Length: 140
Image (tube, rainbow, N blue to C red; front, side, top):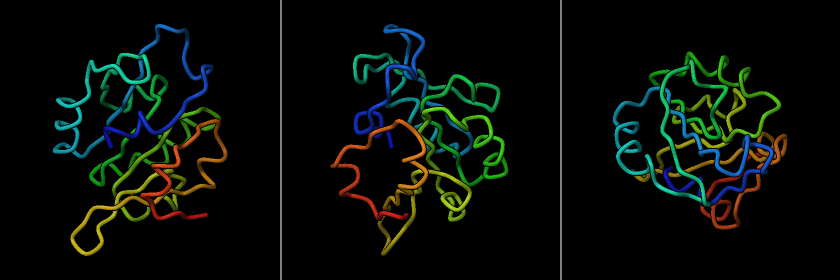
């Protein structure tokens, strides 16, 4: 998940200016959240400093949002908050893509995989790399 920002292109209009940070927002998934914070916070990705933000009060600032299964109750709120914006949505619960999420983590034969809902991605100006698409199960 920490490599998703390297494999997705956001339009310049998704940022206030050239110096704006890339805001990676986390809701739930405490174990994953701590790993992400330690791995990517303050790194530079695509020329932008990465800030890791938490909590539902920061949704208007997010470029990418991860919703953990323990906070799936916030999915509807998140999707409403990001509607019409170029925000990559990622989750780790089975109903995530059915709710409108773009990338869902799932387990198959004890391995973590990703599924991409292209219909949700196409509604935005986000561009996924061929590498990301190649490693995923694609849903339409």
